Length: 124
Image 1 (tube, one colour):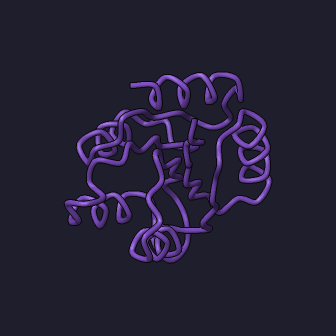
Image 2 (cartoon, rainbow, N blue to C red):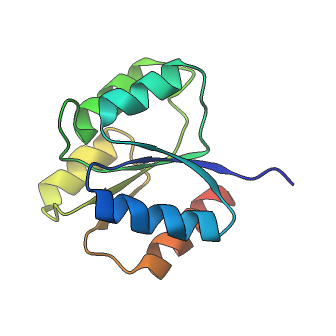
């Protein structure tokens, strides 16, 4: 069985380390990008994750801008995106969903909950 790949787009190193340990420990392969621009470079270079975990507020290119760019490319449009952010306003949730996010998890989050959502999305 091929391991599923996750792209983690997160600028906070402590959160990135925690999520990386969690998904790696659960048997997933992962790559990490510090912002949307780095993530887009990976995707345009041929990397195709099975799921993207995406923060909203990041330097260079934030989460919403990244989603807009992702949606412009037909080949990347179907990659499920889970927002992982400290923003809990209903307007932010709506903006993310309208741009194609399949889930929205607010920080701080329970690691087991995030892993359960990842497992559920990747089993579809």
